Image 1: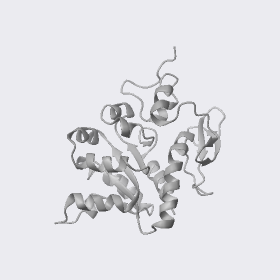
Image 2: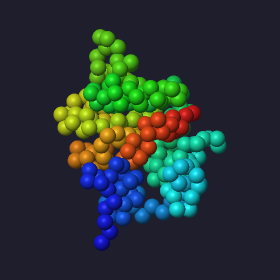
Image 3: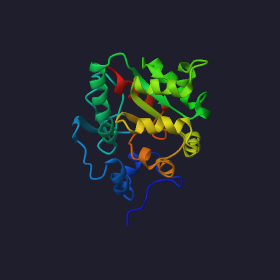
Amino acid sequence: MARCTAPVRGHSSSAAAANCPACRNRYGRLSGYGGYSGGYSSHGSYSSSSYSSSGSSSSSGHRTAKPRWSGAGSTVRYTPEQVQALTPIRENVENLAASEPDLRDVFLCHAWDDRQGSAKELHDLLEARGVRVWFSEKDLGLGVPMMRAIDKGLVNSRVGIVLVTPAMLRRLPAEGIADKELSALLRRERLVPVVHGTTYEELERVSLLLASRAGLSTAEESMADVAAKIAELVAT
């Protein structure tokens, strides 16, 4: 019988679970990775190779893929699973960029407790790369009705980023503002979860729908690397 490769707290992301011999089938049912062989996605083609932990090519290293939206000189590396998950979101970005060029690039959904910590870190990293981010800490003006401002931010952004942290997992069952934002984002095919300081297994216990969306994880790469991938994803 195949044994799970995860630590006690679980896999850090769906991509990690997809590579586990014991868990890949379960995550295949949730996020569409089951039976995936790499090399081609139904949403578009990409090149695939292997690289070592230092980033150089290696036949015994981890697989890497280059999506079509990544520039020729880009050093950002993706797994084939990330390319497969992000390709339909990229297609939506391109369609919206053509039809509604004035939209913000990203709506950042986060728990209130993270507003001065990890959410601000991600916001600052994205803006440093030229990404136009709707972020409550700067876009929610004094005297402006909160829910109306959030509705406007959601409507006027191409992609929704959900920062999944322990604070977010605590907030979602209370069905507060973060839960309402997430419900709106889940109705659109433009949602990227960023798992930070927790695991997909813990997220499953709170929201199966959100856990079924493949995303990015800071357990496998730095927040700066996550921001670089999002910046490439929304670049027009």
